[in-house]
Length: 224
Image (cartoon, rainbow, N blue to C red; front, top):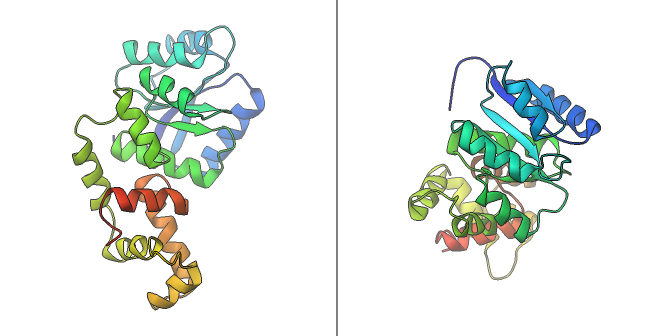
C-alpha cells in the first residue's frame, strides 16, 4: 500500500470521545488524513457516497444500528481494497475469530495508545495484517483470514529482524528467565538499548510483550 501523500483513514465508532481520541492520536503519529468519521456502519455507507474511499479503517465492533461485524462484511464486499482494523473493549478469542471471519485485518483494544496504534497501522500498511500476538495469528488462520501461506508469512516477519534483534529474542527465551538487565550484560549493551531493540522488534512484527515475543521466538526457532 505504500503511496505518496498521507494515508487516508476512516473512523467508524459509536463513541464520540473515542472518535476524537483516535483523530488526535493520528495527528500525533503523522502521515494520516481522516476522511470519514461515522458513528455506525449506516452513516459510514452514506458518507462513502460523497467522499473518496479510505485506504484504512478503524471499526468499532459494538455500534448501534449497523454494528462492526456487519460493517466489516459490507466493506469486504463493496470496498475490497480497504484494509479495516476492528476495535473492541473485549478482545477475547471468540470476538477475535468472529472479527477475522468478516475480514478484519486485525483487532485493537479500546485502550490502545498512540505508540500501539502507530505500530498497528504500520503493520497493516506494510504486511496487510496486524497480529498483536502469535495466538491471534493462529485464530486468524482458523477463521481463514491469515495469509494463505502461513510459513511464508512467518518467514516474512522473521526476515524483518536484524541479527541483533534475533539475538535479543534468543536471550529472552533463556531457561533461567533472565531479567532485561541481565540480558543487557550478556549482549554488552545498556539496559536502555535492550528496550530500544524490543520496541523496534514490536514495530516490525506487530507485538512486543515478553510473553508474545517468547511465543514468536519458539515458533520460529529463534530460541536456539
